Image (tube, rainbow, N blue to C red):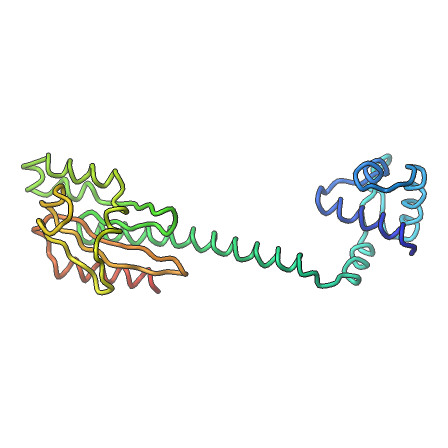
Length: 235
């Protein structure tokens, strides 16, 4: 096959791969920079069709590559660094997006379970954009001390809604877990509460998971539940 005919065939293959549409001589003349007439392109396409490299799916339609054309392309392929780099970068990017989505879902499920088990507010920072989420406000609203003084829990909710992630970043949180009780909290709004926090790590992502509840909480049980939850994430 001569050079011009091969270039025309390659243009047909790449155009069809990109658009899934039959390729006509006008498309090749206008879109691929062939400096020959449409009549010459049509003659070359007729020759390629006769040789079994392209076919016409419908009358008056353009041509599409056959299996023979793809085989020729594969046989002539060379390992191109640019193509390899793009494929590798795409794999890395989609892998990160995939595992980020999975991590966020696992976090949500685990924090939901932790809130149910401890009957307190449970939270976690998300591994992207320094955001966080919390579950279990209804658990706190049922506590006698907050029923008696609703303003206390209102202040706590206001802090949660204004992004606890920034506050957590200024706290010292150890690998074994940190506990801030009442006045030990850095915010006056949290003086009626205790905060338990512990770092987590999963699939290359990391953050903080914790429990926020009344100072009257069962500390031994809650820290054990938190450690168990973090262990589930770290698996």
